[in-house]
Length: 277
Image (cartoon, rainbow, N blue to C red):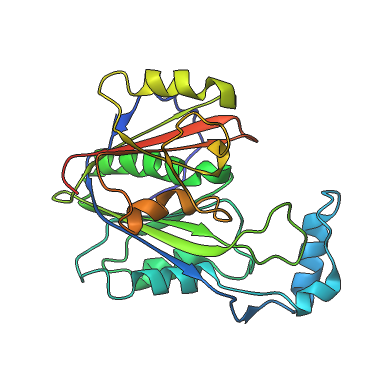
């Protein structure tokens, strides 16, 4: 049982990459076409009007009748169907940049009931395109403190909104499953206050304790920087899940380094997989 208490400030994370206690046992990803879930109800008209007021997001009431999408719940169900055994999941984290477009739904509440073992489930958001890196760091802490044996991280992209967005985002879900006897070892780290030009030096500092893998995958935040001319680029239109696509579809395998940069938050995220795939 978890009991709420007064918030306390945690110390800043130590520099460098942190090794997850569990190993990567599964990486799968699925893209989705247009969804069928609608949100044209009076209460949500008022909700989105209040939500977007003053933020120049181009909200239009009539668009509520048009918008259809794939919910986090439905995408999580589809990407996991037939891929999990009945063994207990100790912890599941849903990581996303854009919020669930239907605020009446909660993927964590649903997953708590349907995943084996009724695990602790919560979301990580507000970290932009690096939400998955934050989720991995949080998961690592829970693994260490509680001795968890099986942890699931679900990364979501969702592009359906009743308001205008700067860039078109597709719908996709990535599932990363970690187990004691999994495959590659995983290290993860982030660096704050980072401009794109400073990425190579910061990356060198992060991986100074071990040689950098020859294979590099770069996300949308590093597109066009020419830091790694031979790097595998993540597919466009999937800010959170795209980085993991080459790993999930078998284009790359460990040892591999995955890196992305969030220009809005000026933060660099790095994940290194080593050992057996």
